[in-house]
Length: 295
Ligand code: ARG
Image 1: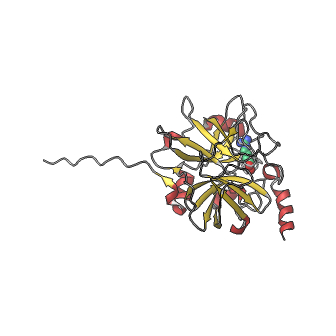
Image 2: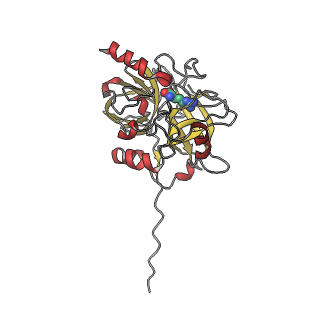
């Protein structure tokens, strides 16, 4: 049974997820223990690895293609691996998961739209019991300035993951961290084209995808980082989740940004995440109501 599953995986996952061909953050450095307690190591069916983020005590975000039984190659399907296929640890920095807090997945939720285009590349894993690690919520209403990719100069994001350090290279022993600037929607569409079910990578779909990377390349997410956090910080240094690693053509090549699920924008945040995991979203405090004028 498992053997059959693995061969299906090997064929179907093609470019992005062939077992054994993991890639991590390129151009990063070792993340210190405790700096990113919400980072999750996600192993699927003992066969391939992704990264994820604890957004609430009982919810981990990872990539849609990390839970789809056909993975990320060409034929996406919203049919998901069962909860028992996931081995997840949080708050660890060792790639083998040995120092993390083990948590048990008892539910797997993905947007049904994941079938239609390569956007919507997200999954929510529900945990049987609350994790002890500190979650990082999704940036909610009023925090759009933290991730708006269309500003000049561009803002910066922190990307973190357990993936490989060069395209097709080795998996590092320690969680990797790096900083990259956001790339405008227009520039990203120039690289990947518009949404298309015929493109193997699906094209760029700005409602549910956001891009980041240096024009000169050199720093990027890579295989094994999928589903992992794209964080932004507010002025006080508080972390928010704004994206989840999705795909890229190669890794860290000049002129080719990485593509992330746009988790903090309205489409995914309001249509997918909020109905299932409202506690995983932090909205800005409402401005105090204007005082009522009395005569
Ligand atoms: N699809 C990859 C994974 O499954 C992530 C690739 C990200 N690539 C990039 N160039 N940013 O781990």
